[in-house]
Length: 212
Ligand SMILES: [Zn+2]
Image (cartoon, rainbow, N blue to C red; front, side, top):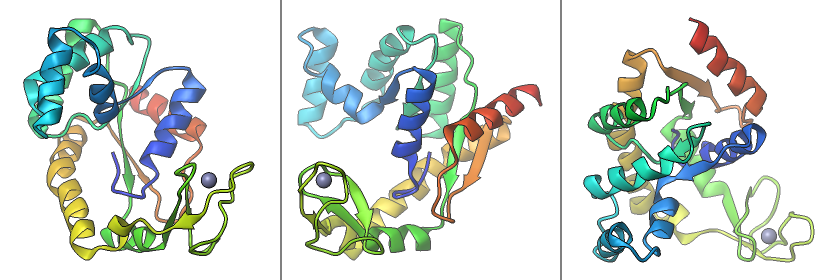
């Protein structure tokens, strides 16, 4: 879990690669699952079209089948999205005989997230992000072999959109954080300094949590 620009996706990807386990991003997973021509696929597709991706019963059903194939481990991103879904996930994992090692929160203040969004440049070609501290608007992407142009995403600088995204995080995610904190499964990492922990550090924190 982490507010926009906290580095949640990057760290999740690193961890999944290092541990050789899948990273399941709920939104991406549901969009892919919607393409499968079966009853569940059609049910998800109908909700995607209606803009109701978060319809709980469908999400839970689809996720349960996905997690059944990932009992050796997974990094889950984008679920649970409410305190009630924490319990839903726990029940799902209990049926699969899987123990959730930890929930991870990357801590970053809203002020810092706003600053990072304002400074963020996205490559039009590879979609990679960088910041105005290291590159210029209209400049060339720093990624090797990419000749794309860097630009601000309009969304990142529109005050209402930014407000909505930060409010959504506060309202949806903070109850989930509270639930995991109360059950002693939360690892909090301060990322305000601008560097993400190495995934080895995170794994050590997860191991320490299991011993406590
Ligand atoms: Zn690029």
